[in-house]
Length: 361
Picture 1 (cartoon, one colour):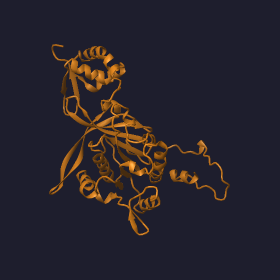
Picture 2: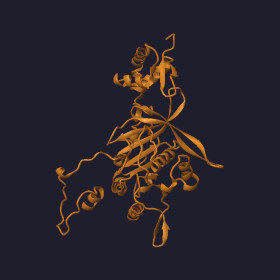
Picture 3: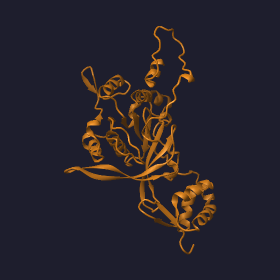
């Protein structure tokens, strides 16, 4: 336990040698309180695990490559804020560095000198698949050799788990070396995973595939999803579904575009849109799964919406906030919008969507 504490707290003093075995206790008066060290303010904490989840096809890996690129250049993150340029380590068992990952990093303008891919580990002269538990000593030595890393990406994070990924105790046990590595290296760690099948309507933070242990050990959970926008078109949303150390709501619109990174080679990259407010459940339009409760609010929601829109066009964000304050679900408000034939309009390129009543309503 003392060794683990020194690993997590480099400023702590080494324990005296030769003392008998026993409980090691740290007095609160000896603890130096410190603010959370963020790579991306409010979203990617250094020294801790962040999970990025979502359905297949939502661009999760492309999002991770965009964040990796910003880390290598110290570029601007969505919503503002930068970091010092740093090294990035990527372990992917799903995508090839040559035809997928590097082209996406090129499209995101990453500094390739700072990007590194784990290919395996050499054991007794033979190159084998990377094993986090077995190769931790080699991983730490490599990180020290290159002068440290700012970000590590694991895709998928479930590959770290050698036991049953649906058993809480086994997930926590197998993720602990990763947690310890993040603390020791002061690197932000992103683990990518999928949503469980048939989990729509649940708390987004609880939709991650496998044991609840994944959600429990992560300090921040981000979710990527495709939802229907207020103009009836599909849009993609990156939302913050959980945070034990900062704001646990909000998000960003994004789209996945193609760019030619060199002659004859195109790759996907992220184009960030407007910043969003609200819980992940609201942003993903996955409110209360009890449909009867929403239907019971039908008349109340229609009266509410008529009253809010009586003065003219109103921002959707303001409508949903007032509905939340009034105890009316977003699902009921959107159903009332359809019933009342509410007109949807956009006031400007950056002003967001507005609703207004039709003239005869």
